[in-house]
Image (tube, rainbow, N blue to C red; front, top):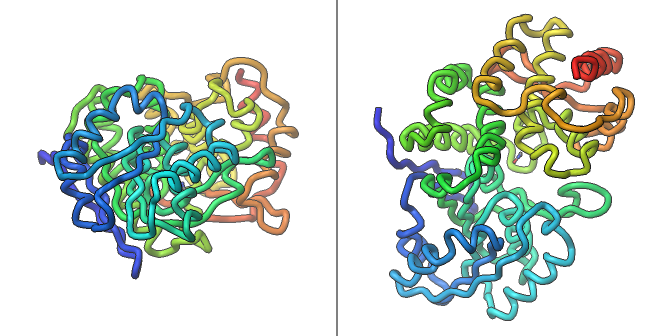
Length: 373
Ligand code: GLY
């Protein structure tokens, strides 16, 4: 089936919104935003890379609907998600005289979405914002569901708020300007959805993943749509992560330890860590006798076929020993009363949340993965 555009609705009472998905949405942005009312002036928060590539198109799309705009372009990269840039962003929005009824646009990847979304959450105790995600990771994950925030010296995303966007515009044509490594890193989050709750989607990715990575637009629209539909379903059930939403953290307990061990650097992008973490979560599940021995091999084979990172040996440079990695897992936000929580799987497409994981089995998975390096 040819599917060149779609819309997913997030049905949260009083905070509902649409996620529009398809190529070329940027040119129509004004038509989507104008009906929301407010002043005919829009403040945009973006990063310098995205601004260089796409800001002119975004502003032209706004002008076409009679909206003026002003943009703040922050440095690209994770270090922008900090107090200093948050203050700069809030000051910019206040300089733009943003009022409660106005719209702020977050235009970029996960860093800009999280930072601008948090600024919108705290500015005048909450103003509306529209997410226009430009990376695959942001289109399938971070722009949807209302998690916003910044990092501090104590860790990632420790300061933040749940603040749902008013609209998400996922223009899949923008994915064409991503570096292949960044695209594939985002793929780690796509495959996560199949692995955690939809075997058929995983099978579809096994068949169409390569075409999607090569630029097949119908495949891109379908992959983003199925991912955000699954995320919307989960967020509707559990907006503030009291239960099921934690399923979206499949692979993230391992990932966060690996990100900390590599200093949140270019050695390991977040989505690459998610891909490796998903493979390790399936390995752990198989060792605990929860899923078949074939499942981790099948997960790895698909990730290998896609060309993303799969194993610890794909991370360049030194890594700490297994005990240290396990200690870094203990710093994770998902620790409850000192107990590590894992997302494990009974099978591909059937994940669940548990704290009941013997420490020595986790250690053995880490030790064996390190020994293969
Ligand atoms: N990225 C995980 C979540 O939004 O809950």
